[in-house]
Length: 284
Image (cartoon, rainbow, N blue to C red):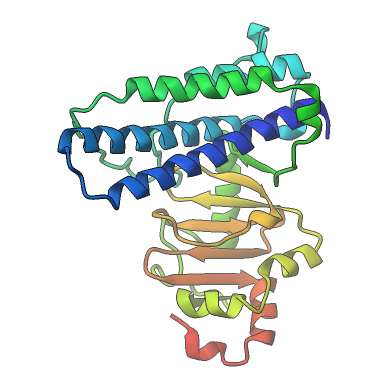
């Protein structure tokens, strides 16, 4: 692994591990019986804020394309203004990007709650710890970094072409697709999500896609962040936003809705039906 990629990967590892640590810590605090309500709230919100800022940093890191990183010094510090923010600057400056609509629908209405607890020091501490870690990584530590699957946050402009292709091929006319907005297509079927997921425990969607030479996929959402991902990260599930998955040829699709439906289309549907003998019992 090249040094610049190892550095970027180490940064992702750090954010994922530490964010998960603070998330678990938040869960543990919630499970305790507070003796001092004020101190309890402070600890809870600081722990949550630490996890959240690390997730934000990781998201911004994944806007950098690991296939096209600059040399390690620029990747680490971004010392040349023309190269914009790099890893250390991201650690210092990354801010949460508001969830934005991706399919022309109105933006979500978000209310800002006032919590009355200052968590700025906790956030600053977590940013500084991340930056220190990145700046002090040695050459031997970089050699020991374990690879992570490719994952890149799409720029705002990239999904427009993808969405246009999906709309044309699969007749998607709103954030909701079949079966919520039924489409008259012969090569799509909607399944109950629980039954579909149970079937997939013995039928690997990833293997089927890999057998077709697919190595990367697109994960598109009606709101929020969208990705280009390594095939190993394929996990078609509703996460609070409607989800669509496909690859460059747009000849297959999976759609996960908020109504516990999972719709499959194209050649992937044919292969599923060949193996799922009683699929008709599990349609939505």
